[in-house]
Length: 363
Image (cartoon, rainbow, N blue to C red; front, top):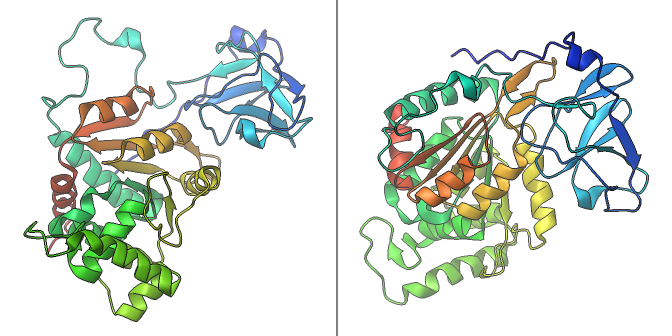
């Protein structure tokens, strides 16, 4: 697979040469940006500083640019310190020494496309065959050359084949980090421990007697051992999503919610600690796949830029997929305006099994 090459703007053009320098104003107090602050996007953004155009190497939408040590840092409002030099200006085409650049990967400008055309959105009528083929190639490339981050809802843990498929994808090396909530881990562990998901057999879907206790029994037992890893070890369990993550040393972040049962020991109860932990994993991501979780998908979508600056200075594209049976969820992510965000509308359990087979990991 060959990645699209990134083309930097031509900074010899008149609009770059003759525009003013970007202005940076000290933050008036901790956690507060100055008036007329500039809000970052998911696209590459350049700032003119001392006659040079500096690229914000790591971006995130809804944050502000901070000039420090000759670099542009992208900082959440809550992490601002009094005196931080924050970029100001609401324009995007050099008027304030700021340039937002969405066309670096040769995606084509709006004027290159027909104004009127059928089926330009993603819907249940869209043909997704080419998306699967592209995804196979992307994952095979990223396995050894990038970082693949998966964002998952609990639906996978309720189905025998889906759970098995994702376990094999982890074991095959196609998962470098997992972001989820208490539910995915709980029901996956319930599947390993009691062969049920919320009290239903994960293969036959038949409810077992007193099955509504099963997820609570699982949580309670994990809390007794103090960690997921210890629970799996002491109970002699080695199948499922969490077991595969533990076995392969794959980092996972479980962000809690107000409705959580238990929760499991590693679940973050503080949303901002969870956000920081999630962003730590997203920072190096080159492919992100969100499946069957609207809120986690939107959260990760907001913190994932459309590009990544590698250690050698190369700018590369970030691939972003959202898979859900709900068109609303998929299109909510597409509305971010990302160059690379693609939606696939399908049952996620079928999706992960098909993906596993397409990658040659299914037995």
